[in-house]
Amino acid sequence: MSNSKFNPFKAKLFSGWGFLSRGLLIIAVFVLLHLLGLREYTSFISGTTSGSFGDLLGVTYFILYSLTIFVAPVLIIATAFMKIFSRYAGVED
Amino acid sequence: MLKKFFSCRVCRGITSLLLAAVIWLPNAHRFFDQPASNYIAGAKAPPKAMAIAGRHIRLWTDPELRKLELEKMRSRNAEWDFMARCFFVWSLANMGLRDPSLTATVLPVMDSIIDETIKLEQQHGIHFFLMPYSRISEFKLQPERSIFIDGEIALMLGLRRLLEEKEEYKKLHRDRIDIMLERMQKSPVLCAESYPDESWLFCNSIALASIKVGDYLDGTDHSEFFARWLESAKANLIDKETGLLVSSFDFEGKRISDGPEGSTIWLVAHCLKLLYPEFAAEQYNLATKHLRTSMGYFGYAYEWPGGTGHDDVDSGPIIPLLNLSAGSTGLAFVGAATFGDREYLAALYRSLELGAFPVYDSLGVRYCASNTVGDAVLLYSMALGPAWEKIMKGRPADE
Image (cartoon, rainbow over all chains, first blue to last red; front, side, top):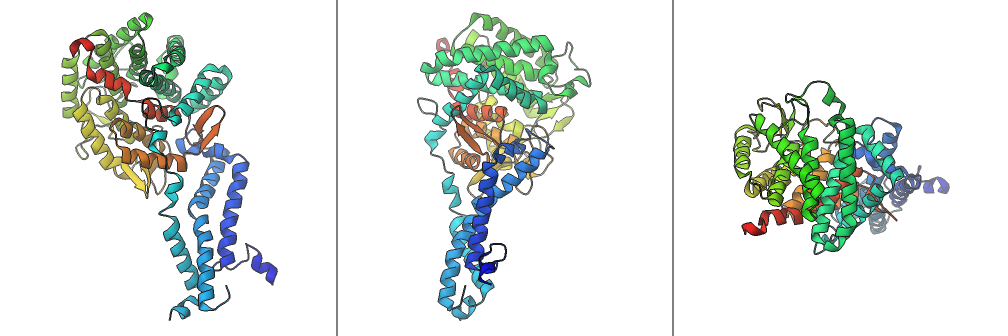
């Protein structure tokens, strides 16, 4: 029971851990793609490559990068608010 | 009441997300802000320009590296190979004019690029640097020549001479100017073909700038031709809806192929500033009105007015929803730098750091989302200024 609570894939979406784990997961996947060298494939943006499998890798990197910049920090900050509101309402997160 | 609201998990969650978004999203841009000194030149070229130039100099002095880069470019578009050379040489000329201590370093690189480009043109003909459709039909004016090639080479020669005179280049420069003038004057709208029966203002405005550079260097005077050209452009090449100059048209100037587009107008405004500063500023202002846009603090440019329209090889892929065009945005740096639009420039650099994926290494910096021509355009936007200023002041004897 408690194990599934901390599993990022099973954690409730609207919970402190749900936000935090998903935020960290996005960052982790992005870091992995970055370390695999997928940044190079973002040349699809300027049309330097076109129609190849590399473009798909570039698009994947671009999406994960955007999520890391704009979504993951929101999820991580929201974790703190979730904790505060739970404590205020006297309910379990 | 509030406790009851927050005892609901979904209410808590949505409120938390909204508050977090209100905190994060308006502040995310701070991580991508660049100090203006990074990209606006003072007495010397800014650090970012030096980092890009360093990489390009290495590219042009290391045959293996150059071969790899040029093959990558040519596999998509032979024009990019050519334009990367031109923008880089124009950048080096401006860097040398701004900081004379760089002259000895940049001159051999400039000469090597100019010589190799002219050699390739002589060996393979104009089609070597054009897209394949240049062979599909015949140029209206024979023998076939492209103002795209002539104008950009002439500007390379001219700016090289402006930095330091070279007798060997003087004749080459003058010959190109004579050829361009002859062909431009044969067109009813005073614009020569870039491709068969297809004239581009991008290329013709560069040609005009290179003729003006020639006037400055050799004391010739084409002011009457320049006045006629402006009159013709205002009468025939202005888009009625936007007031912007169109991009491409047939040799007669009767059929407009492409209306105003970002990948053309930003550079056209830059070139025309040398001849018609007021008209160029007016075009830049109209371009910002119709093409400049942003997502929050991140600036970029549309390819087509209002953001609607198809993508093509000049625009690069247009990113859905944002309607962002890499081609137009790249050249918007040149426009904003030319007209001292610091606010737009800062927003563009923020976007560059956010979405162009810079990679810093021992060679300097390059942008993964860009390519060699994109980086050269960016370098030019940071270097430009001294050449135009010098010419606009007039020849010493004229003052």
